[in-house]
Amino acid sequence: MNAPLTRLVDRLVIHGPPISFRELCARAVPESTRLLVLDLDRTMHLARNMGELLGWELCAYQGYGPEHLPAIAARPPGRFFLDRSRPSRAVRYLATTARMWGYPGLFYFLWGKLPSLLASTRRGVYRRFGPDPVAAVQRIPQLALMHHMAQVPVATLRTLAQQVWDRHAADQVVEREDLAWLRERCPGIRIVISSASPQPALEVAARALGVEDVVSSGAEEAGGAYSSPYQVDRLFLVPKPRRISGPSAVRINSSHAKIERLLTRFPELADRSVTSVGITDTGYGEDHSWAEHFTRVVDLNSSAPFPPIVPARSPTREIHSALALTRGEKARRAGGDGAYVDPRRAEPLPAPATLGAAELGHRLGPLAGQVERVAQALAGAAARIGLGRVALAAELARVNASLDDLARAYNAAPESGRGRGRALAALRAELGRMRAVQRRLARLERPVSALSYERMQLLTAARATLQPTVAGRGGEAGIRAIGRETRGAP
Image (cartoon, rainbow, N blue to C red; front, side):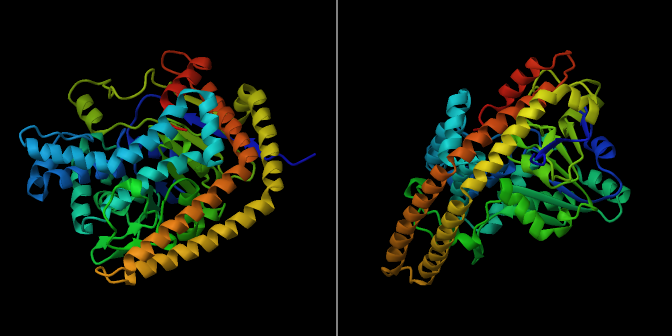
């Protein structure tokens, strides 16, 4: 009989209605913690993605012009900014927004939003993109933002990122004072922000919160500006790049790549004797792999909380699930509205619950057995395609090396000659070869992808089954609530 590949965590704590971030840390972050990793987007601010908002800020900057920067900074929170007092600039802004987000938005709608409506279409996304479709689908808007960021100086991006941070202060959950308190409570703790958002957004967060280490997405910086990523698809509708970063210089810090970079930068994360805590909103389940590496994980204001079933080899013993109060909510409560909750929060609110291993086993026995059977099937399917995966990975490595060479050739060629055009054409041809290899890999991985989809469905159901609410509804009601919250994820 094969050794078990999955297990239940020792303890699941659902903290119930919103509490302060400091109270959450007092409950969920042990004094022995040596590494605390915080996500940025929708973790530090309720329902706000700082990287995405930086992209919208860049649209406003390019559309209305730098002379209108004060008006851009003073606008209300949110993505869109239509200034009717400047009609000609507003038209340019709309054109800029369509150029930046037209193709990425349509792609995300077709492969992210639309497939979420039916189980059959969600399964199709796994078939098309492989066992980690969330990262693949999100990569297109991430690359689009990187292309457009390369058109302005890094100093300007930092200014825009600061404006985004300041304008959404009311939605902020984590305060500088909270982290200072935590350092006193946990001597020797290292606090890190890791996010798929670009470097300027993380720099602003780190400066505001007093955090020393960040891990972000990004590309090579040269001459005071970022280079464009090597994925120079014409559909991104950007001008000819000033410089191009090859694969070795482009970082998309999402999904499993986020963990790989954390392990490289902070090797103590791999030491099971070190207490490590990861706090993330894990929107769309993209950070569920954190429960394979940290000794304790916390899903915060999350639309896809951590499932209580983890790999058998995982060091994770506890999962905490919490809602944390924003500055705005705390201010309303301090002003006399003692039970105020932001209307963007899903209803009904969760009720507090603490479930140990015995209770989890009692509640999840059949589902846990199904997850284990799928995990065993997954391991077998992965083993059967192992040699094919290795061969295709080697082919992709050769393509990436060629793309690095072509990016260097492009950057070295004079801007006025034909050298850049030839290098760009060759690079696009090599990108076609890369996409062909990726399609072959997706076809090879279809048995693994189908089982990955089945596992995702079971884990979502397992977590939803345990979700009590202040209205006293759990089980099927909880599953329906999770379904509402995760629409938009593949």
